Amino acid sequence: MRKLIITIASLLLVALAIIGGMAIANSNKKGKPTFNKIVSTVYTNIIENKSIPVVISTSGSLTAKDKIELFSEVQGILKQTSKNFKTGTQFSKDETIISINSDEFYANLKAQKSNLFNAITAIMPDIQLDYPNEYLKWKSYLNNFNINKPTPKLPETTSEKEKFFISGRGIITSYYNVKNLEVKLDKYTLRAPFNGILTEAMVTQGSLVRVGQKLGEFIDPSVYEMEVNINENYANLLKKGTKVSIYNLSKTNNWEATVVRVNGKIDQTTQTVKTYLQVKGDQLREGMYLTAELETKAIDNAVEISRKLLVDDTKLFTVKDSILDLVSVNPVYFNDNTVIIQGLENGTAILSKPLPGAYNGMLVKTINETNNN
Image 1 (tube, one colour):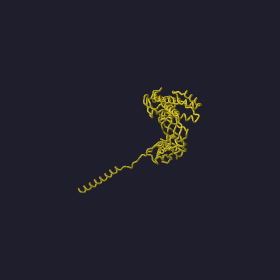
Image 2: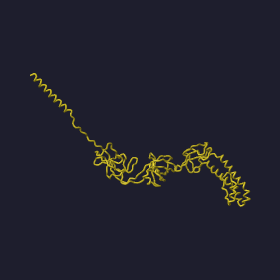
Image 3: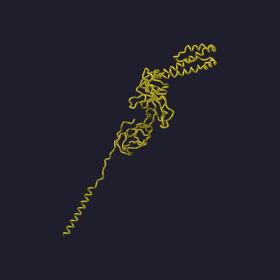
């Protein structure tokens, strides 16, 4: 009897253990997870194709149209003039910019003039005897000869015999030696070729100036030129006289420039053509860095969008029935921040802002912004 009771108790314990294990196993089973489907909200624009002008944006620095570098062709001490030879000094046309001491050279010039005068005086008796008809013109020449003034031109010889006589006495050689010295004397004084301003000064009063030494730089601040590089595909659309808008980097000022020259040669490295613009205006300065916008031609049946919207430079997300569709487009012209494209029909909805993680077939909720213009 005791064995029977123990057996029954054992069977009950085993049965309870099985039932308990099954209950625990069932309690650990998890139901199938459920996810809330997230639909991104996107902003869209409606495409409206039209004719869009291609505006080329390029930059360059200003250079004065009339600009000269001052060099010395003679040697001497720089003299004081009515205005100091310093950067920023303005000079009127023909006003003395630089004067170099020429006392020694001028004394030599006078000596050579005196020699010429003496040489002509020495042949006057021979002229009176051999060429009596020519005597008065040579006498008049000597009477008008002033050692302190420019040497007058020698009288014209009327016969070959007279010409040989004058030349044989060294008169013609002496005359041209004097004229050469007079030309060189003028180089001791540099005069302003136009109204302008000194933008660079490399010597001061009292300095010793040597032959070939650079003295400074002088410009006309009223007219400037700007060199820009244009893609060779559009260079042929720019003609002399074309008006161009230019502005400073902060876009606080703008001016109207004119195309004055287009280079006939293409830069092999950059495949661009150098174009030169001329501009006048207040607040312009030599070396100022400006941006030019050149309108070349119009692209028909196109739209301009942000470059950030392109995928792999040739594709774009459109929205149709709240689903993203990646379509191919034709980029025609890239600007710095935008791109002109063709290939979309009017009324097509596109994303107005990039959507991170976007993919073809993605379900979205759309909010239409102002129509794309």
